Length: 543
Image 1 (cartoon, rainbow, N blue to C red):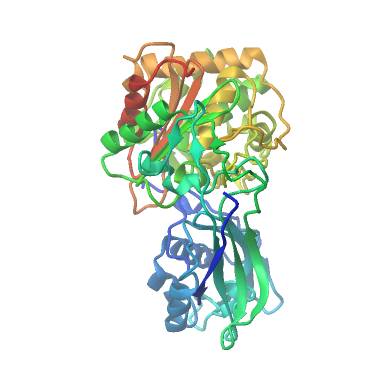
Image 2 (image 1 turned 90 degrees about the horizontal axis):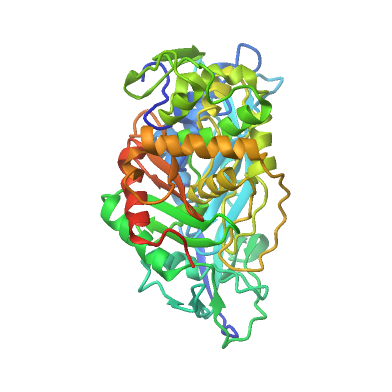
């Protein structure tokens, strides 16, 4: 979203050294994004199926666990003291970054207990993502309330009183890395690249550091099994540097823009070439640690209206000049509204896009089948397919909504839709060129995606709408930049307690850029100045 909000009820030959790091129990890092925002996780159901109170408790437990609110999470279980201890220690020593917990459809057993399967994706710093599935059991209490029926195996199916996990990390000499013109890149000169350079695929079968998550006996330390492995041995000659697609000029400008305009908030951006998907810059604030620009999982908010609009335009369900009213409020199970409860009566669809009117887009939900936005995202934009970027990446998720309320939220980039700046920069590049190019940070990466070009008519319409957003809409912050700049702002709710994330996706010349500022409130006010500073500091087109 942008200018518009979304709410619930008003609201070199490597040398090898091995070091072992052990762990006992939970996730202390918050899963960024809108998966559970405003109650629109996978539990928004009608009267049929498991008791809604049980599902609400499951949703709250997962949200607290993911956000690191461990006392709250433990308090939702049948054994709070034990649960809090386990949740605090489970990932200790495993270098877990920001995990994502995604629930699947719940089931009800004959004894009236409820089971909620979930997938845990836990990024291991510099290595990759440890993914596993488990189940969350819930049992009704004597007072009629529901509690998570605590057991070690709900955290991980193989966690027990006799078994725990440890991380074995293999240190290797990091290769020399250069930009596209041969300029040396280092974490000292470009701080945002510190967590990235060691991850870069060297083009000879290696993928930077190597390591493994292992299940071990608590008493003897004996390795019982390997749960996940990361990295491969390289065949690259030790004296040959790895050349990336990055551009030192763009990278320096990106880091400076975040440092000066993000005002200390967590933020990230990606800039890439429209004609081939090559990444010119990726930057994070703070610069060390988690690479949220490429591996983050966020609700994209109204920047996702680029995809929603594409689906509507492809189907001929609406045209830019059509009248699509934009009221202050619209209730679809919950009350949705626009930021500052703005309204634009008798607005055209073009006006709705440039002002990012949530209620207008939600009002068009009946024009699309439940799966159509996801199909369009995958077929034309490559979102949700497996990308081989050259570093670990999260490639997006657009699940079909499970009810009308979630469908309404998904029209405006909320619900369970997940993306990051890399994905939204790529979406922008595809929208304004018509052709998806798998993003990459090194040349020669495998392309396993299959996409279809957008019709030229749709591309022309999208470009005009994004241009109007800069000249007459919520992205006016970019209006004084030279060149034919187009953009889409976004504001995305994370939770009822936190300020909204601010987004902006833009294009100029042969470059697409996307930026998110956590707790930035609005896209134009937070991400807008970052993108403006970047584009003002670099040539209109990269060489």
